[in-house]
Length: 183
Image 1 (spheres, helix red, strand yellow):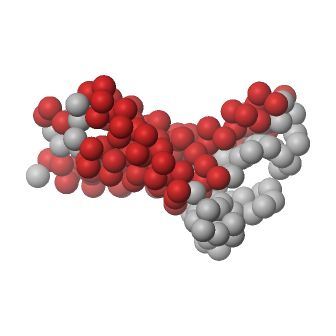
Image 2 (cartoon, one colour):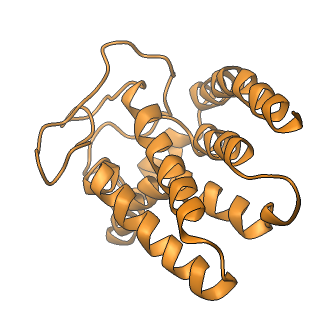
């Protein structure tokens, strides 16, 4: 599973591909892209509040159903608050949320159940690519680990290396997005 830096870079790349220059490039759309690209990992919050941060990680929030729900909700909010057109906002939100799922699919998973429930509620089956492209963020290996164990596990050199690889992987996509928008 990737770091928030990798997920944010993916959201920014999608933002650059999807959002046109000029009046459509509002800061709220960039914020939407960054938030939804990281939203599946908000499942850490209930665990942090319970003192076991990984207890709910890689659950239902890592499914296309939640990508759909989050995108519909974000579209409704932005349409109401900022009078933005629903179609482009929904597509941006869904792509950014889904980018998180795709990236996690190609990262290592060190804790059962291995993989993510992409097609929940249709199927409870979890998916994980046999090919690992990302190093993955290092955190605790058990769902019952304490918050202090979780913080210690996150603050490692492995996570610095994971961020470096994510940047190297995302830079060509950012270059392409920038070039595509320049034309």
